[in-house]
Length: 413
Image (cartoon, rainbow, N blue to C red; front, side, top):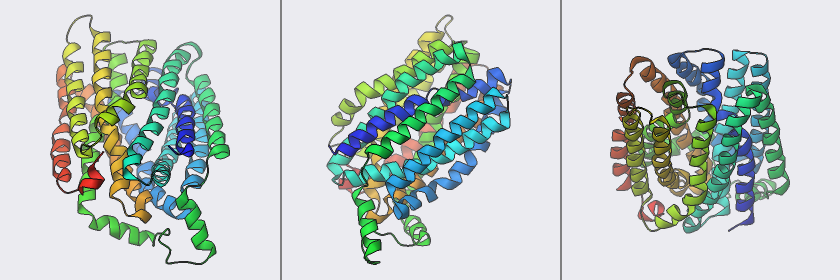
């Protein structure tokens, strides 16, 4: 495997070590420190997500034109500054400042994500290698998440939200400097610079105009349906980051520390199981892996709601949910990391990843609002999670449709 992929995975681990000390607990900060209600939390998180969603497709297009490495390094530096703003705002009890920091962090992630995906695709041009390359980065990502989320839950309990946020910002800055010092430009970045210096406007390494990119995207019906499937699946999975912590802490009364361990279990399962699960799927279709993922995510929702009805089984419900959901997440990560790059034209990989991330972002941004409204209106735990699992149905149907239309080579893990 290319050494830059390994370094990127290591840097992603350091980055997520810092980010996961804060991000998974924002909804709990809003609920437990500021006293904001469930529905209002969902509405605020949706509001904060609007600007990152608008930026997402353009982030991918900028990466195709400015360069993958340059774009994601600048974005990750911006993320560190945004988390610093969030921590300072928590210290001053400024809800607008916390929301502004969250919005800026979201913009940074929306721009960095497509650039990182395109960078990995550049470094692993063979489709047979690409899925494993994305898997390595995801393992690094979740190794950092595992340690960060467990430590964050404990630190928040002992030090409070602001101090934990300041520490997280420093770790994010270290991750950015590490990647700046170690990563080489991708072949696409080098080709883009070479084409520019030789005035070879017709060089294949250079995309056309942004309007041209939108035209290419608009004509690719199969890809657009794939994006819609991603929206519905993200609407389901998005409850992991907001609705699940709120439900666990404020309905089941699971402590920060126990919740942190449960979230860390998710990361550990990814670290140790993602690679063997990816290899197990080799030769099968990406869309088949997506369908298995959605079935497991729906099952995890039903398990959480059902076990929560049993007196004294709150912790068992939380950990059962995490185990089943993470298995689904691992299967779902295989197509979501790889398919947009596989079906994209060579000069539009960033654009395709940007639009796919946009649609996924819309789904995950709606999750807190939907979850907040359901938590506010429904008291029965099983009914709560049955309602939240409904989008699994259109997601399954759409992935089934797409699976019959993507070229077999691009759809094969």
